[in-house]
Length: 97
Image (cartoon, rainbow, N blue to C red; front, side, top):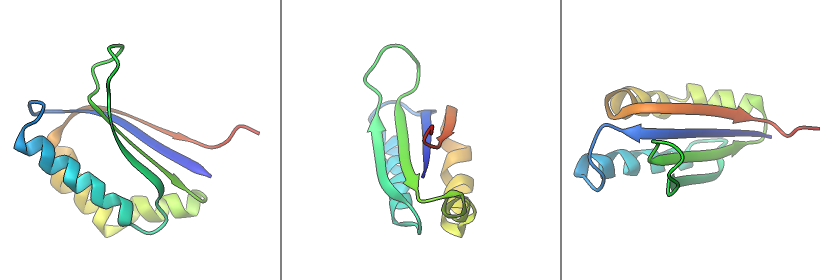
């Protein structure tokens, strides 16, 4: 199992139309092949400057790579991510045996 997580800060004010557009587009990633346990999360803590998180799981590295290279994912990155995200941290995990 691979757990793919990203925390991010958008360039736009909280509650803005552009923020909502980004989050709506991000939600659509849940439908891509191989994505399991998708979550779009709002940061509530005060220990960092990130506003949102995305978390999803994949059965194995092959499924994760398929998602990462899927045309709808690469389109999301080009259309939304590169334009809208001010800062992010990406972490990919596998269970520690």
